[in-house]
Image (cartoon, rainbow, N blue to C red; front, side):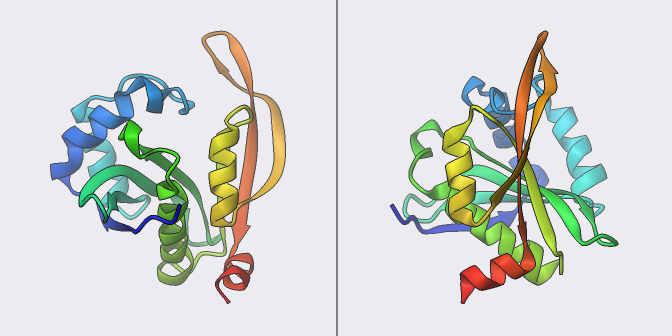
Length: 175
């Protein structure tokens, strides 16, 4: 499905929605850091990371429904090395599997390459999260490698797949 999606920068007013989504078990299970997020945590992130330019975070809007459904972000923006790490979560369960994530990723990549002037965007995803990997591939990311037993959660080791996209790959996809 091809969904009409837009993104807009997050504001402090989005805090309650971000916290609710981020703490939902269906979202949290795909994060490396699974400690519940408080409003204070999010406001610290917003003030110390987003407002300083270290992170660019956006709300994802499903234009057909006219509602916010998740968030996409570029973190650890490194202008010297022209790279950052990508992250996304669809907070509304009913909006998963509809192409919204892939569409939002393309908008975030446009921002990374065109507005920020970056050369590389990468991400980490659990090796067993095949659905997310397919979404990232739809947006142009390529698998670059698997780090075996890379993270330990509740005493269990998980493999992480690293994926990335370069500006030149992005430009080829757009032409």
